[in-house]
Length: 197
Image 1 (cartoon, rainbow, N blue to C red):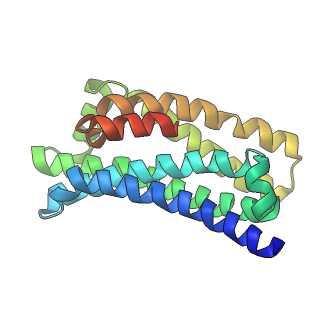
Image 2: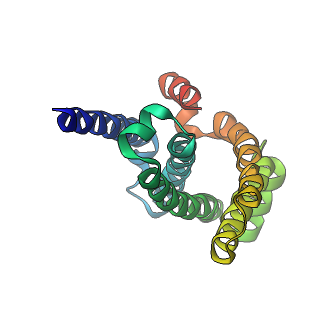
């Protein structure tokens, strides 16, 4: 009987997780997903979902290893740590794809080269330079985590480096809520996104 109860709890957590993905993809598809029919629109659209997915996965990272007793009792810290590790890898890949796809899509639309479009984003769009700093901080955390894991550094050193994630999330957040097209066109999605944070 207790085993069935634990399975029910696991399934409820999984349902909560997948419902969030469904909401994110649903709102994305209702706006940006409609642009998949042409090449440049598809690049921008895929860049947007990469950004939304990366942000959600990073938020899940906090939830997984935040020592949440409700979650830890059901899955165990070892399992949550493994999920945290795989989510971190995917989040970094999506974070890197986000600016690459959007910049390339916009450069194709405007007819300027990639470097010029990237520089335009950095210098003329509010909060993009903060997002770029956030991306560099995320990359720093990922690279140092790999180095720390391979060289078996103490937990305290790993923990201090991971505190940079808070700064990365803070500086990245502003471009999401001020420039995120999928958020700006739908007040419900915008509010949902704020609640996630």
